[in-house]
Amino acid sequence: MDYFNLKDGALACEQVALETIAEEVGTPVYVYSAATLRRHARVMKEALAALDDPLIAFAVKANPNPAVLATLAREGLGGDIVSIGEYRRAREAGMPPSSILFSGVGKDADEMAEALAGDVLQFNMESVEEARMLSAVAVAAGRTARAAFRLNPDVDAGTHAKITTGNADNKFGIPAAQAIEAFRAARDLPGIEMTGVTVHIGSQLTRLDPLEKAFVRLGELVAALRGDGFDLKLADLGGGLGVPYGPGQPEPPSPEAYGAMVARVTRDWNIRLAFEPGRLISGNAGVLLSRVVRVKPGEHHPWVIVDAAMNDLMRPALYDAYHHVEAVRPSGARETINLVGPVCESGDTFATARETDRMAPGELMIFRTAGAYGAAMSSGYNSRPLTPEVLVDGDKWALVRRRIDLAEASAMPVPGWIDQTS
Ligand SMILES: *Cc1c(COP(=O)(O)O)cnc(C)c1O
Image (cartoon, rainbow, N blue to C red; front, side):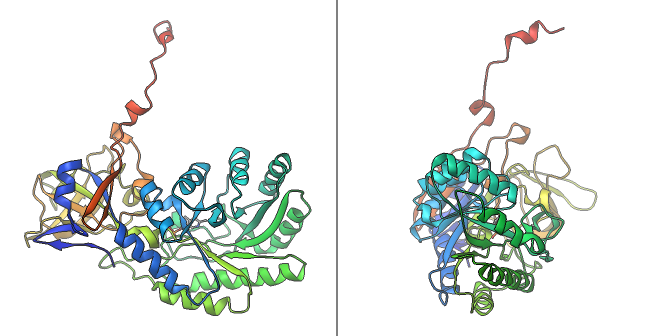
């Protein structure tokens, strides 16, 4: 459920008309609903209420906007981070280090040192090579790093290949057959205390059975490690639960069903559990608001060209992802269209042969479910500025990211020697 609804014939975010935001900020612009963010955080907490003190660490990469993170921090969510930039944002937003999990396959020594100095709860490591680097960093700093290894459970997550992460062919984690050896090797390293295990098999999962299979394998690893003398304190079950993207798209299981499955599978684990939801929290809490530039006749359907493009919302080009689109002030008329942006790539296509609201030049429209992996992935391709972001809370709203001209922000003088080069 979200808070983007028709109000007096036009879409509003909570109490604020999207037309007002478009007028004052311009388009394209991302608009987030604080009430929806809070609601999703609470739904997740309620779904996990049967567990003892679960840690819910928002996957910061899904939406790293400082105002979004601060909203979630006020709900008691921690952060799952994959870079030191995300670490700093999580801390600045008010997420305590004891709620921060450091994931990612390529953390470098500087990143490890800064996160260790900040005393993050756990480093989720992906190889023995990484453990050696973390050990050296910890010894140099005179500290002990709490760490886990990520299990690659070799399950098919049943999602898009580019967001599958728990398959033997993926770069992530350590295969079950090598996991105990990896834990033993890390135990022998100074500066590291092996406190946990973790697994994350992919994103936008629309079935529970691959998750259950992965959790069962993680439970087997927990039991085997305890038999080997490890004192484990945290089992991190990752993120990945899908969200509804719209009509005709797979309906993911509810957070309640997910929570019930987790409670059943982990009943005898006797360990604190952590979760890393990203999309589930922020996906349906955001829309991308855009304006139709023009409509060009097409062979089969008209090309509706909007001022948002693949650089603003990459998911359709990257994953063939579906985003539901609507007119901000629907007239009731419907039309089958091709929806595209202005970027010079045929991949800059949001929808093909889509039946939707008729959209005339100059009209406003939205892409729904754009609050996760939307602005976070945006770029300045085609010398387009980075899309601004707005957070709405009731009848209040604020610009929470400026429209950034990257050419200006990164400008350096052209080197004088190019004139001497023949
Ligand atoms: C991306 C990611 C998540 C979040 O995935 P969602 O599908 O957005 O819930 C959680 N954990 C790790 C390790 C990730 O890489």
